[in-house]
Length: 322
Image (cartoon, rainbow, N blue to C red; front, side, top):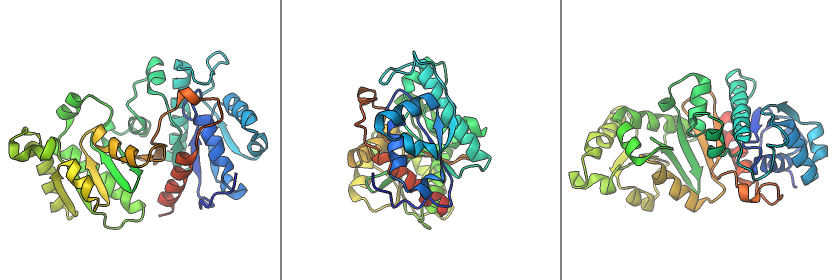
């Protein structure tokens, strides 16, 4: 693979393999192979050594591993380490490697964390409460879960989510003006670290047409409209709340705030399939995963595309350099 143009020299990034039975080990190693030796010297790979070594042998990348800084964490038995298998040991391994990397970021040993995809079923089979990397960052950093948000970046869009992996009813019950305000604040700060000094913001309505003046419910009058008023009072450039379809068709804002998971995920994944970055923002550690899953159906076959990991490394390199 050709060396990447990513400027990671002088910055320290942790890279976790995610679920060791998914494509994470493969795309992590392929992404590292795309870097120059000087760039790889600024990377630390977190994950079970046995799986990493096996994957490197399959890909012909054993030589690259010799000079790589590695942390052997999240070990699992040979019986559980089977590509494509959803296993509780693999779920626990993904959490262990990500947690160790987040702790290293909190201690200042690395500047940011790039996490390869996990498998939520495997994690839940391991008996670990988990609703995505933002909740893990919050837990490891010792802050409330609702203080860390997910921001998807891809396809020319940046979308922060006020709620994430929960039922629509649960999200509606939990949404408040304060939660929306906090999500936008976190998104604005992330945009500034990405180089946008004064990002323009648009807030999606909760109901179609932002409730059409109450015709489609009272949620927006109670939640999204007061949130926008407060954000404007703080001096932020904020439009909305308006229907997500209208705002996305216009495409003139730097940052969008989605009220619900699918409002934000569908447009980004439509425009940037398997190439989006998912930033956990608002905690003491900066982490970004990729916008696709662990692809158990192709795990171990050597055909997974590392483009999203490479792009995420480049994105976080820009964030920590800003």
